[in-house]
Length: 308
Ligand SMILES: [Zn+2]
Image 1 (cartoon, rainbow, N blue to C red):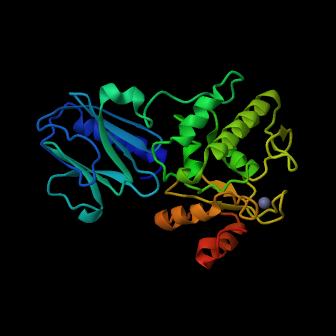
Image 2 (image 1 turned 60 degrees about the horizontal axis):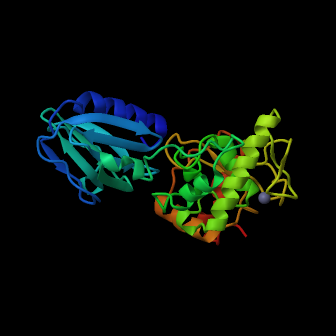
Image 3 (image 1 turned 90 degrees about the vertical axis):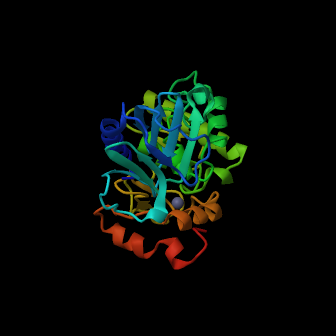
């Protein structure tokens, strides 16, 4: 249930079960932030991306990010849970239901009046396809991303960092900047963030000027010309820049595919290895023949340093 649509469905189920009902019990062993008072009524359940939030009538907000590993389940009292109790991160009881969040890396609460200051749920980031987009704002949001262990490929899809990137162009921007897609945000310095955001803006703006899609030139990673996509959809093909084989993986159930070149996307690759070891993403592959080759050649399975 780690994919956006699944979270959306989970939110719909939780909304039906919880909204308007008093909370009879609340446990969250690793919670950062205040705890909802007994009897507080659930007012709203909202989701976007992999974020799900539950809002009580006193303005307390529970924010969870299930990322690659977590999920929300809904059970009747006495019903057998489908995951072990050691994986429970949130347990919210009402008279009729128990909502349980398993394995979410981010579980925190805050008061709603702080909402605009909360980096995970503040206003959306600048729309990078607009010529007047505030790139410094977007760079700042990426650098100070609320989940510093999140892989950069995930943060680039977060609308609170920037609007308009999407799955195709996050892959292309990571290729253009030679950045490993699973580098954690904490490994990026300010220059890395600036390079990513300015490259994304250049790519998106040139996309608007030219159609069909455009991507980076080989010789000048920061500039873009009309051409084919460099990595997106090209698993199993040779990288135009270094000749290595473009790979693909699906970091999470039914998540959007990440395409990248292990030969030249080596920026922050050592730090990326740590992220991959922690999350051990589910690798449901494209039906492409390259998938089997890819699986057998996963660098972290070969126990090599990643790429290069
Ligand atoms: Zn390459």
